[in-house]
Length: 525
Image (cartoon, rainbow, N blue to C red; front, side, top):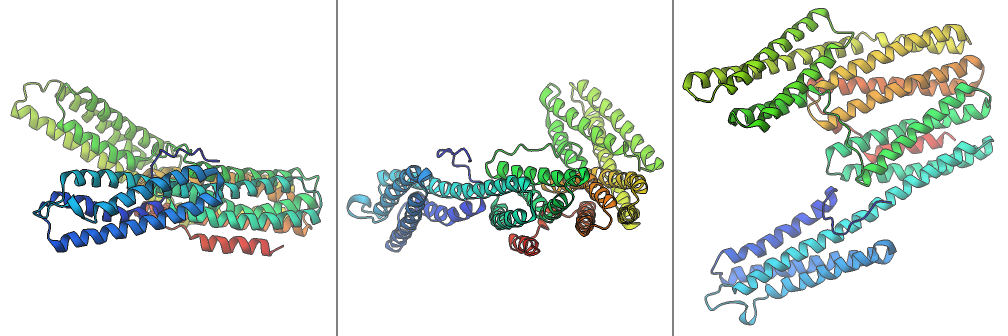
């Protein structure tokens, strides 16, 4: 379960943030009245009405919080404490906005003491209500984690079944648990504030959805052909991928997810950082070593990114030579810049102008590098996904498997593997042009799926080649072919969006669609 710290008021979900916005607005209005001096009777009445609205809102918060406390013993004590604090602060604000007795001076201005008390009560109220909402949010998280554990337990059960009857029963129970997990994780994904975590969650949920049908057919194939090593390898690969996806969901919702270094090898993001370091360097003095180090490091990152692109075996010779020339030119300009600033202590007009020109040249060269790499990525995506060369090896592999030709299959498996590597290479190059982390994560996750699916497709083909008349082996092969083709199509869409400047993280389907697709899988039983 998630480690809970009731004092940590960091808001991670949009629902908590959006719930707080109206209350913050109302409290801000109350606090700000202290800065406006004399108040008319009409204004004081309006403030009193706002105080009543705040008090009623707090009552509703407290009522919901107390209900949650009664239903969730593990958070009951913390929730009741937060509710009590909110109740007291809300009552204080209501009292202060009533403006009775000595709370108003003769000229219609609230007393200084009450102004201070209002600020103190407002801070206390916001803190308490935020705690109530975050504790309530932790209950949602724990419910999701419980759903993950239920699915994991069902997977363990599915691994041990030995008969079709036991499998059908276990898979049916697994299905209902997966539908619940899909629903809860979809809601959580939509509620996450952090777009990077949202992309991670979306990728994990996509894996679970795609793996469900593969789990069904690989399990049936193992039961039908228990001595088949390829069938067992097929099923083990599916189990492994599903558990990795659930581990990602768990780490994201518990805020323990280790952020991947998606910016490494991402030229577009490194160029944005370089331009920021360049501006800071322009404003720095010759003795400012920190700005100089950051500037040099940002430049080195760009060269590393470009080098990874030039390592691509599919880059045209003339493009590689042009990019190499730009890199060498950039390095020469960089040396010139550092030398000129080192000697630019007299700050005469001529030397300053010369340094500015050098800085402009390095900026232009970096933009030229961006253009050339973008062109390389665009060309490779077009050539790979328009000429459809990668689609020829899969039908040949499937036909060899269906005919029981194991020797021919192994030869075609090598061709298929090379096609898969080509897809991954194009993705790696194109990811350099991703303009933000969620976009880079989406592309990388699809690329990783291609990598893990390739041997899985070959396993399915080997099983079919060994049992060409087996209906279950045929069904299993068709499922992996369908998943592979869908994954390649998804990769093409993501990479085209990147080269076109779009954002694939905005294209993920809603949880309702996911839930219906899960139900469709279990209906096949």
